[in-house]
Image 1 (cartoon, rainbow, N blue to C red):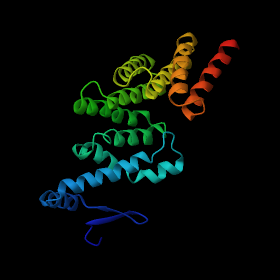
Image 2 (image 1 turned 60 degrees about the vertical axis):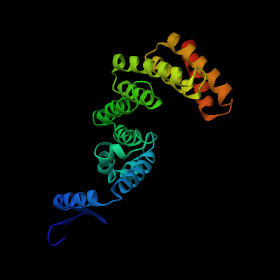
Image 3 (image 1 turned 135 degrees about the vertical axis):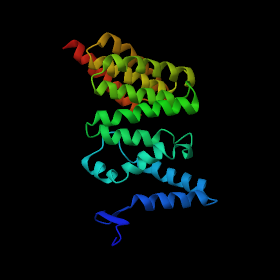
Length: 229
């Protein structure tokens, strides 16, 4: 610290000088176990990303703040060491962190990169691509960019059906998301059949008392109440 090679940035929090970071990074590349260490680092960061909830509280945001630069590094610099199953997790964690604060413009690049990265690794037809399409559509919807959101919702739904079959629980989720989108614009006649289809799938595949089934059923009931009022 006296030589300014380490700087205290908060209580029990320190930051290495950039030259020291570069030195350690170069030394890492010389190690035989470099790839193993990078994979371990990515797994640790994925766990952090998965702990960021969809609607983070102020406490969640405070706890995640110090990890955000490392998540960004994982999503970019160490992307190649992310497993296929974990590939979108850092992007999703970063976007949830910013969306939870209403910082949609800061969340947008991570959603866009998630879609680009998954397409590059998996091609155009893959569940992770469908999930990235859906997540980007949700953000566009939050921004009021409805004309941008709708085709992404529709593409995500069609892809999920092609990949998983018409009666997979993930199809029910996609149907519910598109129905919510239509309902938010007062397009009730477009939303209702989607809710009905989603509810039938959820009841058959998950059961009547599953949380997802209950959520879809409540959404349908709320829609019908609004149409009658």
